[in-house]
Length: 493
Image 1 (tube, rainbow, N blue to C red):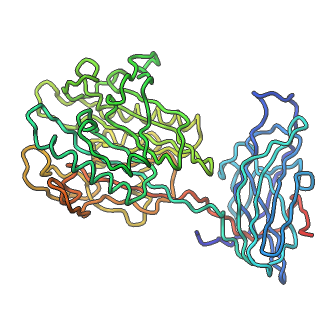
Image 2: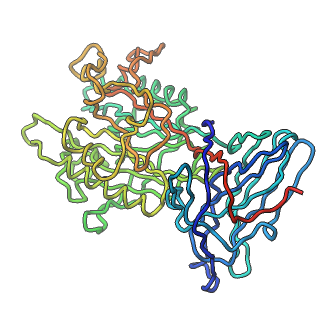
């Protein structure tokens, strides 16, 4: 858990919460969301604890909490009637810095309530905190969170921290033309070793690129992988063009070259979609690779796949997307390079910004951008659209490019060599709409495997290296000494 911060804070500018609209399914407010706690004061063996929640609507006659406190020798319950108040706050001041309610993620204001005189000498106390709002004579309860205090120390939310790990990996398309090329006969080893890598890292989300139909046909993922990870299903989804008109419909999952796999023991799918760059009117450079699931002989490698995922236990939502930009250079006569990566970058930024506005949860954009940080197209265009590189957020990220042309399972090469340049020349990136508490950003270059014919190390899996980014979900708890305030106060009793 993060080290608690000790700063001076006072609450300012209160706002009355009024209900002026009759109850209906369309207008009823959403319940407040628990944010954190503040240690008000410690005197002798007593302390006061303030609970803070985020309020997203002005509707309602009152707001408050239902709180159950459990400890080794007893239990106390504080119901909504004794905690409710008609006042919320627009901002707080801490260390001479003003934090608006929107800085903490609220749409309207902050609601607070203090329990006074809590003993510090009865061991750990688990507070089950449920924020509520009263509207139309009914109490609408939010999601319960449990926070633990042990003596005078806050130990954070009991279910937190949780670490979320995401992989982006271009797995090297098979390109089997019926002549039993090396890529085709090696894919079973490569996919089996890849599934082991995923399971060993206990990943939440896995984004593959170049996962072509023949890779699907020849892949040999382990049963453990298949049981734990589900592919985001997109059959029946339409590919929208730039004017929002529906084009073709995904009739077979094999059309998806940029799939997203998710841990089905942890997440459910809220929404999903796919945008085919060519069908959306972009000048994207596709592979001339015909297969039964392609439209007009196109490979559908250039696309944006996205899903909104909800954690089964906590209810936290995450938008994860996967893309593969056009190659920056090509020597194929009929696929001359045009400046399309900028188009693709603008398109991806626009679509993901719209999803962020709709769902308001963290947005992660994985992909093979086929452009480096030192270039002006693709990657930098997405960043200019309001996205951060999670590589920059990690304390000690792997400083490697990731791409290595010499892979022994790629035609023309008999050996595999590690990437030779730094991360400024990376093609694979994991971007996010908001700043995350990134614990690690690894480009895996030195993992070894045994028992395979075509795979000795991670460098034999593909001409790209897997990228794994992990971040913590826990918000920073506010261990704050607070001055005089006017918030609702009740006694421990």
